[in-house]
Length: 85
Image (cartoon, rainbow, N blue to C red):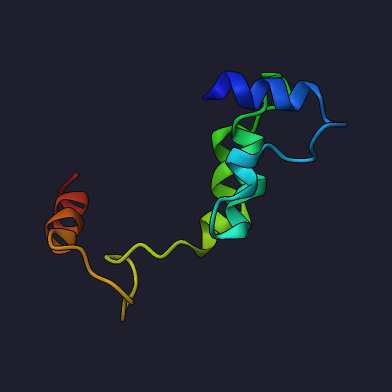
């Protein structure tokens, strides 16, 4: 699958964005994924850039939010374990 993405990146005149990324939802994640999958390691997003991306910042972590929109079954256990570590 990555090979087809890489090939599409090499022929940008054919497509602005490979269909594998272009069809993802939500739209806001697409630019981050393109940066993460960048074939050139020098241009590829590092962890700090990924975590600083607007879409990543919008992802709710249920045990860090006062009134989460969703709660995973083990969210309280995960939060308690994180406090121990």
